[in-house]
Every structure is written in C-alpha cells, then in structure tokens.
Amino acid sequence: MRKAVLFLPFLFLFAVLYPQHEKKIVILHTNDLHSRLAGYAPEKNYTPLSVNDDKTIGGFARISAIIKNERDINPDNILVIDGGDFLMGTLFHSLEAGTGFQLNLMKKMGYDAACLGNHEFDFGPEKLAEIIKVSGKNGDIPSLLLSNALFNSKDVKDDALERLYSDNLLNKKMIIERDGLKIGLFAILGKVADHDAPYASPVKFARQKASARNLVKELKAERCDLIICLSHSGLEKNKNGEWDGEDVALARSVPGIDIIISGHSHTKLDQPLNINGVKIVQSGEYGQFVGRLELIFIDGALKSNNYRLIPVDDQINGDPDVHQSIENQKEKVNSEILEPLGFDYSDPVAETDFLLECNEQGDLFSSNLGPMVADAIHSYVNKYSTGGTDVAIVAAGVIRDRIVPGIQTAPDIFRVMSLGSGNDNVPGYALSRLYVTGKGLKNILEILQIAYKSTPSNYCFYSGIRVEYDPGKVFLNKIRKIEIIRDDGSPENIDFSGKNKTLYSITANSYMLEFIGIIKKMSFGLINVVPKDASGNHVKNMKMAVIDMDEDLPGIQEGKEWLALMEFVSSMKDKNGNGVPDIDNKYSSAVSAFFRVEK
Image (tube, rainbow, N blue to C red; front, side):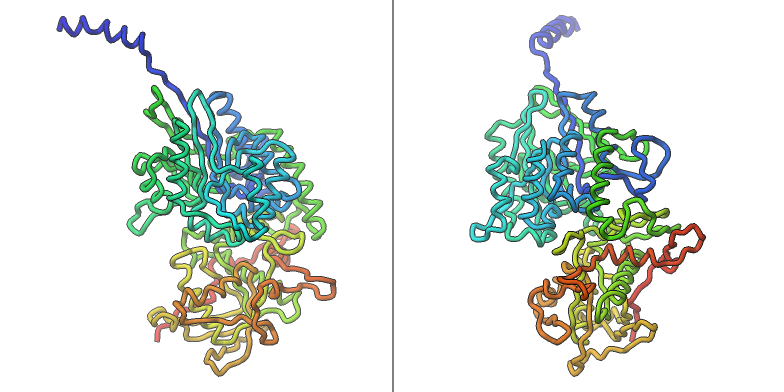
C-alpha cells in the first residue's frame, strides 16, 4: 500500500510534464439536397423566419441557421460537407447555368466541400462545367470534389469539365486543417450512380475501390490525420436485414478510410455504421436532416465520437439573409420560367385532403401518385398533340416527391416530376412517342414486369391500357390479354401475334423511352423490340421521337411531364367552392392497369 501511495506523485508529475492533447472536430453533413432551397410541403406553408407555425421540413435558411449556430460554438474546428446530388429537383435548378446561384449560396451558408453526384450530370458535362464556371465567376463556392472521373481524349464534349481541374474549380482531393489536424478528403461516384447518370457521357468513372485505394495512399503520404471519403454510391439492407451496398463494400475493402460521407441511396442513418472501423454516415434526403459527427482526438489518435441527426423543421428559426437571397431568386424563377407559361409561383393550382405518394423503398403496388401521373400524361398528349397516344408510361424513378394534403402551387407540382431538360428553355424531360406492333407492346410489358425487381426505380405505371397476366407462367409468357382503353371508355383487344402489323403508340419521357434499347439485353437476346414512327420507319435517334405539342408554331413545342400534371390537376372539379380544384378522390388509393388472372 505504501508503494502505491508513493507512486501517485510520480503519476501526477508525469501528467503535468507530458499532458494529453485533446482536439475536437465537428463534421456537419448533408446529401441529396436536390436544390430544395425552400421548405416543403406544401411550399406555400413554409415560414422559415418564425417557429411553431407550420409543418414543413427542410429549407436552406434553416440549414444555414444550424451551421451558423454550430460555428458560433466551435469556430475553429467545424467542417461542413455535402455528399452529392445537391442540384436537380426544384424550379431553382433550372436557372443555375445562368446564375450559379446555389453554389454561391452554399458557400455563404458555410459549406466547405461537396462532391458531384449523378444528378449534377443531368444536363450533360458541358452544361455542368458551365454551371460551375459561372458559380466560380460570381463568387466563392465550396470546394468541389470528384476523384474517379475519366475523360475521353477523342471527344470534345467533356473538355470544359476536364479543364476545371486545372482551374482548381474541381479537385480530385483536398486537405483542410482544423484545430491543428490535417483532414484529407476525396470523392467517389459509385457504380449504381454511374448507371443513373446516362447524360454524363463521354465522361466515365473508374472503379470505386481501386480509385479509393490510390487516393488513400496519396493522402497518407501527405500525413493526413483523418481521411474522409465523400461517396456518392449508397447503401441498402439485404434480404437478411443487414446493411449492404457499395459503401459497405468500400469500407470493408479499402483500409485507411476513417469516415464515409455517403449519398445517392437517400438513406437515413440515425447512428453511424461501423464497418471494419470505418464510420459510414448518411442523412436521408432533401435537407430533412443535418448529420452532426463529433470526433475527439487525443495525441492525434481518434478516441471517441458522438453522432446525431438534427431535424430541419419548424423548430429552427432560419437565417434571414439566406431566406432573402432565396426569395430574390424565386422572383427570377417566376419571371423567367413560370410567367411565360401563364403561371405564378404562389398561385394555387389544386388542393387535396389525402396524401399521394410513390415510394421506391415501399410498396409500389399501392402507389396512388404513379397512376395519376400516367393518366395526366395520357390526357395531356391526347388533348394537345395530333395523333395522341394509346399508352402512357411513367417510371417510379422519375417521380421525385409526394403531394401532401393542402394547397398545391407550381413548385409543389414541379417537384413531383422535376428531372431532366429538353431543347427549349422549359425545364423537364421532353415527352416522346414511339410506335410498336402488338407483339412489341407485349414484349415491352413482359420485360417491364420484371425490370423493377432488381431496380425499384424501373417499376412502371400505365394509362390507356388494361392488362391481364398470370404470374405462374414462365418468363416472357405471363401476359394473357392486352386492351387499349379508348377515350369513350371502350376496350380494344390487342392481337399480339406476329400476324398483327398494326402500330400502337407509347408515350413517355425521352429518358424512359431509351429503355427500349436495353430490352434485348434484359431478355438475354430473346426479345428485340424495333421502335418505329407513325409511318413504320425505324427510329434510331430518340430526338426524332419528341412530340410537337403545337404544330402551328415553328419548331418543336415540347411537352413536359410536370406541365401535363399541372394541366391535369387544375382541370379537376372544385368540390368545396373555394375556387381551387380538388384532386379526384379516385386517386386516394391505387389504380392499377394490371390484373392478375390464373388459368
């Protein structure tokens, strides 16, 4: 006992002479913001400068307030990061090539770095380069990262984006110092996200794991204390209920990564996953939450961490400067996009007292929103286009938001079908129309009935058609009967034998119709659908299939899914006499075009 008592002063002296140095890093992170600058939904209810008076969520004014509050507490050791897909999803993104507004705003809010996701490429690499250049010219922007992009030396379409690396507007890696610690960051776009970026061409993306190993090696050589991978790849649960996916595989396969800021899969992780000592975090989607990861280092070694998701809701009193900036941008959206179409940002379009949704991670069979969108496209094309359409198709993957009970305005409707662009100044994919034989129609429907099983975003909704199928039959032989439903409600039975040469029209967005080109691959070469025009000529270029919605005007007047939906809901009856159309109650539950029969 006496020896122990005598030893205590030596311990005290050692602690005084050789104190442990504790340092703290706070990482705030978001992912898949999709230009949700304003809170939702309905957006008309959004009041970011007051609390406890609305049920909306998200909004950059609120996110900015969270960041500023954290920076006031931890001024020297905070790092703010976004995991990609910060663009594309609201009317605001449509002006980015001209204004560069959002990246400037994100820097003003306090973002240090962001990685490029697949939706940043939705306008193509040339337009993406233009957005970044304009943003950098107009003011400061977060450091943009993409580490595994491969450029085509024989194609000039990606030259402008490639030059951004030499201009330091785009980087493969970066090092940030916080509280004396060197933090290395790099960014990866994963295999699934690559597949979901068809307009990135000619840019390709190197293999995720090999790229990550090389970047970790480089950052280790620069003696980084902490290495963070911004991975726009994602994760999911497997059939056993265990977390799996590209980011889990990355953590297992690439030693040296400390943290993965994940994105793409829109996954809400309440606590970090710990895979081989690598922490994986992801904060959901659309700015609903800001992730907060606090790391404690003692003598340079990570000793502990604390994590939570901060809800971005009406409990947050938003940043007034950021809110005003967004309000100013809203006026530009109104004058440049909506007013020329005869709309106003704040005017009611329709209202509903029930929820309409299409949840890719949920029960797609029970979706009531998907069938309504398909009906809207079918109605729109048959009303305004010469020749109309027999069938309208919409995929779950392009339905980007719910319609929440309340008054709906133009931005609420646009968010539902917000992706893509055409060859005009109106945002959104152009509606296109192809013609196929009865046999070709059956083959397409057979493939679409199985395509979603590996990728839920491929699940399709239909209008203008009634199909009977037998799930017990063998592959490619499940459909028993197809009927086209004419405008008067009468069914027309389709002969899908090879003898029937009649052509039937299919309308979908231009991106969706490109799916026909991969049907041969998905059917293992058993099916090859030949898309045609109304005269029976083989259509090889999908641009030639874009529908002209007003042939009396010069050029092609493109139709858009969101405009079809605006037209459809605004034409419904006003049931309560308040001057606002009510969404038809028939869409309060799922409306299916497929009917199961067993013979």
